Every structure is written in structure tokens, then in C-alpha cells.
Amino acid sequence: MKITKLLLPILLVLTVIVAGCSKESSQPTETEKQRETIRMASWSKPIVEQSNLYVAEEKGFFEEENLTFEYIPGAGGGDAVKNILAGNADIAFANLEAVLLAAEKGEKLKIIYNIYPENVFNLVSLKESNIQSIEDLKGKNVGVYSLASGTYQNLQVLLHDAGVKEEEITVTATGVLNFAPLMEGQVAATAATDTGLYDAKQKGLGEVNIIEVKDVLNTPSDVFVVTEKVFNEKKDLLIRFLQVYKDSIEYTMENPDEAADIATKHAVDGTDVTRNKEIIAIRNQTSKNNKGLGMFDFTVLKEVEASYVEMGLLQKTVHIEDLTTNELVEQLK
Image (cartoon, rainbow, N blue to C red; front, side, top):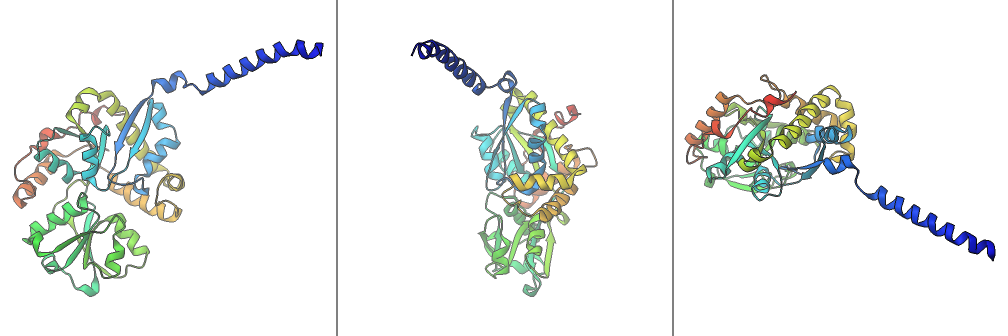
């Protein structure tokens, strides 16, 4: 009994110490307190195409820049742009068309990084449909990812170039994995991307006719864009994010097999390592830039805008050269 009475105070002290330690360990470290969150709105859910971002998370690239990364999914570039306009994200991963259409409506935006310098969109139809040109689409059903996606806007580019009115076809939003409706005969053709076409071929798509949008207009496919407010107030944050993105692209180019393995843990479509390797190889190729990763060619951008105005996709000039800058990319290592 006496021993028990003697032990009780000691046990109480130990309990307080342990509880205190537990509470302390649950508190964020000083380094974690210093980290800023960068919220990226994407045109999609986390998919294999963006494996470099998962590489950056796994390899600690964000931590090196004192960043915490948050991925905000969307259904098309229009969604991504809406998220930055609403203040739900700091930066958008979106197709250039969605950005220009928002700028035309008076939104104050700044385009800061050239993700994919070449146009990766296409229009695909089965050989048996004998669709040789855009004119052959008249009276037919054509699939797109969504009406807020680059597939829809690039289909519009093809239609305008061929002098075909959108009312002369039926546009159907079929979702990101939109080749099933084509294979099942629900649509006569579908607007897609190079990686979407690769997937469909692996699933037995068969012989197809392909019309490449880049042969009509070689628009940079995807860019990073922010609001003018974020650009002016958070330049340091943006530079650190772009540094991580550039470093992760370079790492993924050098280590595609490792990136493919990492994608299995993060991408919603990443269960097949062999497929991951192929998709990563395609995106590594489309990320290459003769002017340097992330840089814009203003001559190309002006041609794109002039073509959009001429085609009627833009009702007025938005002065793309004023919307776009290489300023932040030029500060990257």
C-alpha cells in the first residue's frame, strides 16, 4: 500500500510528460509552418500525363521550395480557368483556347509557362466511315471530351477552317475516355488528343482516319495561366512552383521508368506500368521546346490569335502578346 502511494505521484508526472510529448509531436514543425500552399487547377483528374507532378511530390521537389502542393481536378480547360477566376486555385493548367475565350470576356489573366508547345489535338474516325475531310462530318454526330475542353475548341478550329458550321453537325460530350462511343458507333468521329488516341489503339480501335489540328493551326496545347492579381502579388510563389515543374519535367525525361512506377500510386488511370511508360514518353516529347522549357514564341502566338479572329472563334483581338510573358521562366535555373 505504501509503495503504491509512493508510485502514484511518479506515475502522474510521467503521464503528464508523455501527454506533453504527444501534443508537441502533433504540432507542425517550423519548416512546415513556413511552407506555402500552391493550388493548381487542372483540366482533368490526376492522370498519367501529369506524372512529373507526382514525381515532384515523391522526390521532395515541393518541399525543397517550401511548398505544399494541392491538385484541384476539373473537366476541361474552361473549368481550370474558372477555378482561378473564382479564387479556388492560384494557377491553372489549361488549353490556350480556354484562356483566350476568358480574356475576350474581359477577364484579367497572365499566361506564364508554355507546357506543351505543339498542338496535340486531332479528329479520329473509323476507316469504314470514309470520313476523309471535315466536310464529310456534315449531318453526323461528333464526340468531344466536354464543352469546356480543348477537344471542343479544336474541333471548332477544324470546322471554321473548312467552312463547316457547327449547326451542320451534332456535338456530343462523351467524357475523357471518349473512344468507346466511336467504337460502338454512337458517334461518327471524335475529337481527342494524341494520348487518347494511343489508348484507343491499345483497346482495339482498328484502322482509322486522323485529321491533325496542328496541320491547320499549331497552337500550344496547354499553358499555365494565373489572374493578373496573383501574378502581381505572388510572383515568388509562382516562380518556386514553376521551378519545381521544370525540374520535375527534366527528371521525368531522364527517368521515365521511375516516373511510370510513381504514377501507379497517384494517377487515376495509372495501374498499368507499361501504358504509363508509353504515355510518359508521348508527353516528354510534347514538352520539348526549342526555345527552352516553358518559353513562348510570340510570333506563333500572334499567328494563333490572328487565325482565331479570322475564323470567328474570337470576336475581337485580345492582344495575346500583352497577356503572355516569359518573365518568370527566365528566372528559373
